[in-house]
Image 1 (cartoon, rainbow, N blue to C red):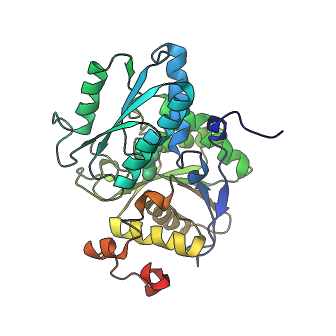
Image 2 (image 1 turned 60 degrees about the vertical axis):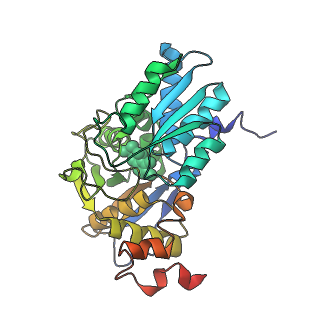
Length: 330
Ligand code: PMP
């Protein structure tokens, strides 16, 4: 009989897929690491599993305990799946810019979700960071993974994503491109690839215009899951060789092209990372092997990025080729 013990054993080992159409005119090979193949639909399953297992080992998370975390959704899904399989409760705290689709998914997996305003400073008592801290203090048996400072966030990538990419490319990867949110993906994967290649692999971060990683002030942007208004400790500033800032408009237009031209229905941070990857790939010859990590699926963004009215309201459809309009093919 062939079966997995539970969904937990399906975390990681995601496929690498060549981008063939959005790469027209580019000589280098551009490969996408498609993380929506994880059981919870995103790259965050990797960190959820390692953070929970490490907390069990250290005794920070005890049988029957409650996991409390501020999360924009994807980390919550990963934590909720691992937690329910292992018998823990979950309470998640989300900013109100997160789509209701994502929040409903968390509730479907059995988690409790508390929604907080986006338009307040991180120091404000109602900020989603502070609300989650208060819940940790008030809930018996609570444990906060804190993906922003938990070393097992980048370590999960050092031990899974990095080795997978090195093996899948037979050590031929020359550039790794990933969006930066907590910084776990780029720090852990990037560090592994640097170690494996004697520092040869170039690591490039993709960041929404306005976020601190690319020198911004933390002003708002619409791409979800990436960019910050502070410097998390999960982000190792010594790993990335370059940070590329990408606008919301470019991110979302590329996200729509990935669905239309590559068969990849992915989230907005994926479009953002691909824009950065193509900017890097344009500079390379046929020996370049650029891997771009696509964190999640587009299913959570149907009412935003894949909705022409929402896109038009923000002016994001201007200059978009008519072939990329969703309504044209419906
Ligand atoms: N994209 C999405 C959709 C995410 O949820 C996240 C995680 N916040 C990222 C990208 C960035 O990954 P990381 O936190 O590892 O930097």
